[in-house]
Image (tube, rainbow, N blue to C red):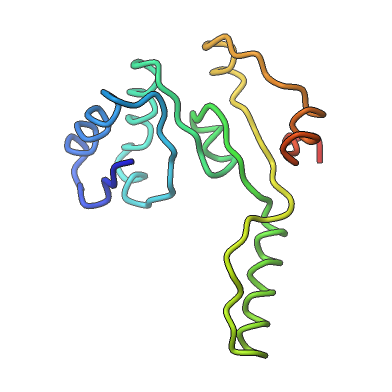
Length: 138
């Protein structure tokens, strides 16, 4: 994975993403406010689509924007974990280890699923095998 935060202009970012895509089939997206300026994120998604590559996003918003799928947690779960860490820090002066949330969701982009001809696993399989809930399933 290549960090492109230091690149500021649209053309440099697209060149860097294009370079990364030469040897990659997928990009794991991280939230970076620089990529939302001047429509850069939309340009990256268009580039991915035209090169027949996928983006895996960290939230449902990324699925709506053009990621193939995202695995994420809901806001209540994330806030609960944050509150636990703050409480433990304040009461014991100990920072809890980083862990994944108990409740994870998975969402798929139906347009890209159809375009790429991907056959999705059933919601029950995702829940039983990986502990993931579909957007409508939990």
